Image (tube, rainbow, N blue to C red; front, side, top):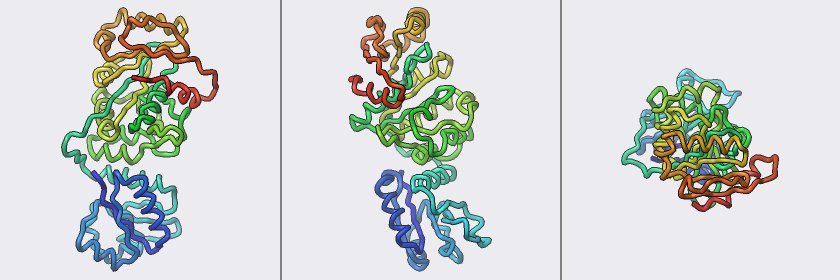
Length: 336
């Protein structure tokens, strides 16, 4: 689904720059039309309907906006608004274009139904897990996601850790994933559209990600149904989903294991990681259910028993305190 957006402003330079950037980076989501006079806007609205509009104040008064599903007031701090203008949702004019687009898409997602039409092609879903902490799950997850991007895929890194690792690896300048959680909890709005609006992209690897939750409880109160809905919504937007999981093997983890196509089981050379992995594979019935889709990842040069799974990947120990450099160095070792 592409949003039909019209931008109306008398500032030709601003409108031109904004529309060009939207067309360049968001053409898969937004079909943009521009106009620079109220007369032209009136003409367009008489013949076409639009999903959304960003309108300067001078374009709103005495204008029939019934042909626009979501009209937005394009405003600045020094502007006063009339009663008619004050009833509209607002979007700030002078800010980063990526923020304008994210804000607009989030607002639209809240007022539109989730019109998916035919079932979208399902993304490949990979879960990254270990029964032991500190083995490098996040570095493995990001390295795998970066590898998929290098193969031409749209890959999303999705953190379901109790405490997110996103701030360690990425610049957090956008809206947090809590906005998606809220929409899932309320069972209303267009989750897929919201995902498109708030996802960020790493400038170095091209991996997509969400900024951290607003607070600790947001991730922990998710139900298994919420987790499934979140993964499905992401899978309808991206081609590869890489899920960074906590070390616990609770009901939510089991749901992710069932839902995914591949599980990367990560271990490092420490005796703690080796013993916990051995306990999991030997004593836990979950392993028997995921064994056929499990890939053993021996991180930091670990030596492990290959017979645990049909496939094993050995990753070297990368001596660096830069977390991003570590994941980047590991991305070339994935050939699965």
